[in-house]
Each structure stands twice: as C-alpha cells, then as structure tokens.
Amino acid sequence: MSYDAREWVWDHSRSKGTARMVLALIADRCRDRHCFAYASVPTLMKRANASRTAVRDALAKLIADGELVPLPDRKGPRGETYYCLPIAAEFLADEHREGGRNPAPQRGRNPTLGGSESDPAEPFEGGSESDPGEQIQTPRGYGFRPEGGADSDPQNRREPKVNGSKSSSSSAPFISAIEWQIDASARAWLERDGHLDRLGKQGLDAADAKWRTFRSLWAPRTADAWAADWRAWIAREHTPAPGRPNLYALPGGTPAPASSTGMTRSEAHMAALLAALDEPTGTE
Image (cartoon, rainbow, N blue to C red; front, side, top):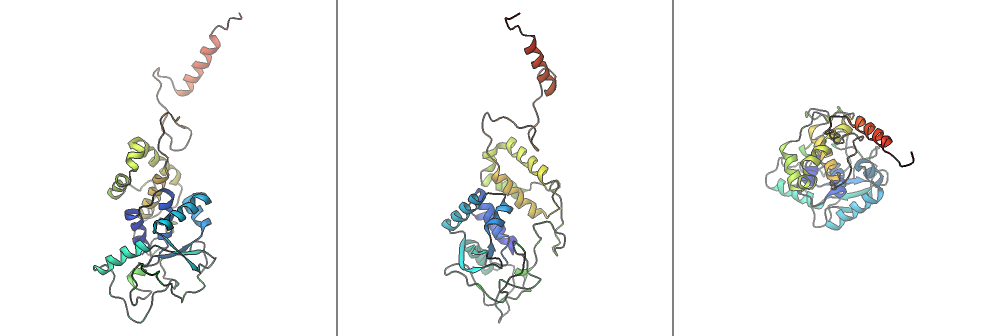
C-alpha cells in the first residue's frame, strides 16, 4: 500500500522540491490506505540528502498545507514522530468506496500499525515496534476506517524494498539505473510540474546523465523505485543560469565545446600561453 500513497504524492500533492521529497519518503512507509507512518528528522535528512533546516522547513510547510498531520501523542520505537497523510488517506478511501481493488474486510479484527513479519514496510531506523497490538485512531475528519481488515488482506501485501534488496516477494524485476528508461508517466510529470520548462531539454538531458552517473554504482531496484528517485533528483536540480560556466570536470557535466581551430582544449590553452610569452613587453 505504500506504493499507492507514494503515487498520490507524485500525482496529486501540491508540494514541490524538498517538501515533496520528504512527503514521498514518509508516504513510502505507510502500511495501508489510512496513511500512517513514523519518521525522524535525521533519517529524512539522510534519505532526502538535505540539511536539517531544509527538512524542518519542509515538514512545517507540509503541516501548514494540511498534507501532513503530526500525532504528538504517539512515538515510534526510537522516539520518532508519527504522521498521518490525511488528504492521501481520503483520496484512497474514495477509491476504495468506488469499488477499489481490496475485497470486503473481515469482521472482528482491527487494522494495526504494528504487525508480523509480513508487514509491507520496514521501520526507518531498524528495530521492531514496541506496541504492535495497539491501534492509532484517525484524526477527526480525515480518512476512512473500515470495520475490519486482517494482516493478510491485499492492502498489506509486501512492496519492493526501496533499498534494492532482492528478498522482496514482489514479482517486479530489479534493474540498474542505467537500464531505467524515462516513460510516459515521467514525461507527463515533467510537463505538469514545470520541470521541462524550468530546465529546458538540454538542462534536463544533463541532469538525467548526471543522475545515471551517480546512481550507476547503486544496487538494482524496481522501475518504480528508480522513477521515484529520479523525480526527486530532477526536482532538486538547479535551474541553469545564463552565463554560468560549465563545470566539465564534474561527473555528468556537459562536454567541452570543440575548438574552431581544430585543437583540443589542452592544446588551445598551451597555444594561448605561448602567444602570451611571445608578446613584446616594451622592456627589451
């Protein structure tokens, strides 16, 4: 079910930049369509590759926009803050009421945030939950809570692990970052969120090449996991500024322009130095 919550973030959330990345990371840990998950600032900093200030500002913006609700009376196994994604939960509940994919829940059992080894999501920082039998109440006015639902229900099926582990029971194949291709969904996201206009085709190609260079040594993942990581990378990419020098030495940098004289870059530098030495100084 974390896949559905994460897809809601990419397709419907109004947040952008670091805020969207942080929301996607929390959504990735939601266990069911009620969209509860816990996270800590240090873990979000590490996974979003962002500073503490940026993560805290992102959380504050998400809370102010109503896309994230903290639950201060509940804590994770290591003191993490519990959050609810109320708008995502309401959206998924509407889909369920309209005849979603899940069968009618079994009566007599309540969904829990703890669980057994078959839980679809792992904790952010390791360790098991200290209260697997307790239940978090949905904040008033948010989401949809069915009367029952067992751990074996389809909404609790295991999802592919984002860290690339091949022990997942999902049948989705694992591929490398080089093998991942920009699909129609990614292109629609680029146009809808304005990243194509912001970066331009050349800037987008350079950002894509840089992403593939840095991710080439990462362990294989599913196509969905790579897509989420790629979108987060593109969202953080700086808009090309006029007059900014190209950093050719950086991985993924644009290739050096060819000299009009047919010389290589090093040969052109050497020729300029020799010409400077030959110029008269007036002291001869």
